[in-house]
Image (tube, rainbow, N blue to C red; front, side, top):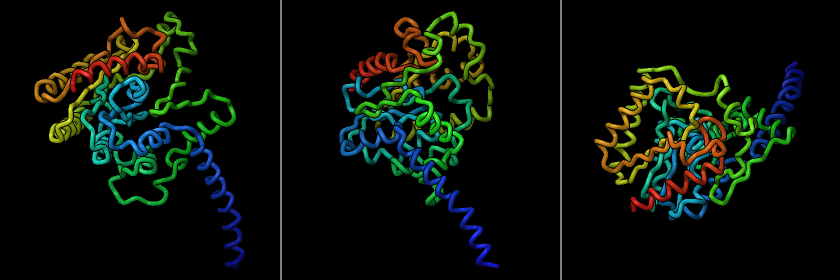
Length: 312
């Protein structure tokens, strides 16, 4: 009886394990910013002067190719200040030449909940950078890619291997130079069609409890950066003009008040504000309302480079 039960268990679990193994292999074979970053980081740790943190807005805005001083872009989609802070503390000892830390404070950064210790990208920070953001001892599954977010990677696998989606192409500095195909390109960068879009992703729900938590971590990070004698550049990344019309005034007011306090209290902080720059950034520079495409990133990175040159 036990032998029959064991046989049934094997017949059930072997295909399951095999299926997950295939999914893991397929996930790891796809290009990613994590793999590109590791390739760029390897053997160059002693040279990086600038570290970029933040979400996909920073990931898609800062192309180190156009920055003269050696720059490592550690930003990633949905990455918040609490994760930024953990990554900073996890990698700074590996970057002995680090002088400047660059991160974003978007319109609603202080009123969107932090990632927390269960953020699914923690698997990737551990696997590729060796940084443990779980706030606990790690296990074998914590290094697995597909199991970090099966619904997301199931969709990615289908897109990459079956649908012929436009492939990610990373340059030597780990920046995706082929990230053009987005909402604005689909609409042909037609300003009238873009203006007529009924909805797009923007936070319009004020949250004072989240605000208190997020600003506390933010100032803790600034104190750490000050104690390490780093120069700090806080970025307000360009947004397309329709984005500004949707902002909640209370969220914006509180964000701007915190920035005002920051500039008053921290003499090592410089504000790099191109959020409303509609003169230099045109519709063809945007991927969607809140992200630049590689053409926009080239412009932004060159402007950032000019600022960094003044901080030397």
